Image (cartoon, rainbow, N blue to C red):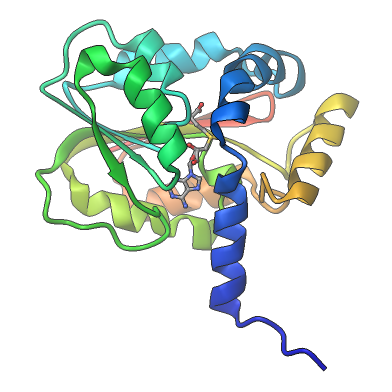
Length: 224
Ligand SMILES: C[S@@+](CC[C@H](N)C(=O)[O-])C[C@H]1O[C@@H](n2cnc3c(N)ncnc32)[C@H](O)[C@@H]1O
């Protein structure tokens, strides 16, 4: 009988699967599908709400973790950055976002958020983690290891903010249910057990001030 893959191998395969979907081709329509259609009609969280979160939370010394196409920085940043670092496991995302927001001279950083990050880098005043947690494999407590990796990169009063699509404790429309089932079956999402209380508990364990709000299927958070 073939041996089952070890847990670490399964985890690495799940991480790779969740990130591999972002190719130059899929990224060319990502904004329309996710931020144009799904946010509005499936998750019931208007993209404008997330743009406002960025507009009110970005600092001039910012780390964007899980950058995708760079839409939020492009749409929300209204002044130059002293330093803007884009972190992603996927080089296609870094390349596309880097081109889109070239005007801010971003520095790319290819890394896996589920592994300890090189702490030999100056700390940030803001860190964004938007629509990343629902992609990561594992239970919420395991996913939130990313916060333990990001926290050493944050200055004393730095703000962490972002959003994630929940898979439990929500009231999804039939369309949202179908989309959740499809993305989870494909390994693009891994959020079947993600609920707001586990997210909030994990944030409160690690940060003094936590604001969390639900908009449709999406939990929007800010912590410092
Ligand atoms: C759903 S997209 C969100 C992109 C962007 N934040 C947005 O809201 O449009 C998830 C992003 O997280 C990245 N990502 C997924 N797993 C990751 C991991 N383990 N470490 C670092 N980045 C990861 C993906 O490559 C992708 O850029």
